[in-house]
Amino acid sequence: MTVTDLLESKEFKYNQTSLAITLNINRGTLRRYMEDTKGEFHFVCRTSKNAYNFFTNQTRKITDENNTSNANSDNTIRMRKHQ
Image 1 (cartoon, helix red, strand yellow):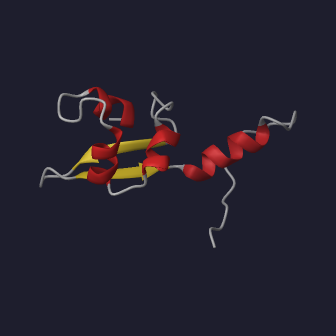
Image 2 (cartoon, helix red, strand yellow; image 1 turned 120 degrees about the horizontal axis):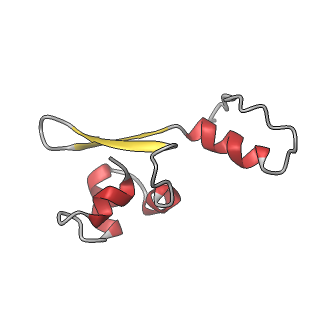
């Protein structure tokens, strides 16, 4: 399930603020992943307690953004340490 799937559901009715609060993330983070309709860089799963968990593969997204300016793309996932 992706952010876009949830926004289109009856539960959230395209309400970004409500979904961001439910996922316990910043609305800006939510908007970042709205275009990832295939779920390449994130996914959302529902727990048994009807809560949602939000998972990202941000290191891949950062690498892909850096490779767009670099003609030599080797499709390697590089880790970036967050400080």
